[in-house]
Length: 274
Image (cartoon, rainbow, N blue to C red; front, side, top):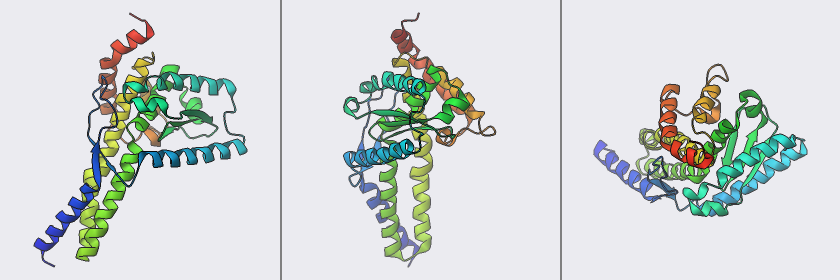
């Protein structure tokens, strides 16, 4: 097949790939200005993804409970849940419907430095994060705010949508051209358009939105900087897996400092400090 015909089929596959997703705006921009247009696939309904997340979360909790690893320390669990509730009380600033999510927060006894928030508001914090990082309440609010931000922006749904759309586009291209080279081109195109920019973009959005959530909840947003500095010192100088997708430590700290400065008036108002 000629290069011209292959190129035409490549354009067709790309058109179908992009057409499989529609543009949405999951959240309001907030003080930090989160306004990137997102693309979601109709094949990944929000309600269905949230339902699946809730089912998986329930299984995780059941497994942890059976092993004696669920909310073992009552005071520790109460601390985490209290901070989470103050943050959750602010989610309506970014999206009103999130106020009605079935939010849950639990502590899992696990050594990994990790925390996460599944679609629909299912939160978990590992004891490893609390024990190894020893975060202040404001730093823990930065962690939880970051993870809640991922859920508010529906980053998981966005990634699933992109993967599904990419798979469709590559399958069509490979079937029509019969060329592995064309499939490789589609894979490279997918990586440039979606995987790298969006994974880094997602982390930056979660950082910024999380900082604002913390400030509005009365937690010093500058703690996000000290938190990340602590994180970067774990694991031989590299941040934990869930905070590792970012160009560099210096750029992340600079961006966090800028975001924190932008929301300091919100923190001052919420905390009553002058």
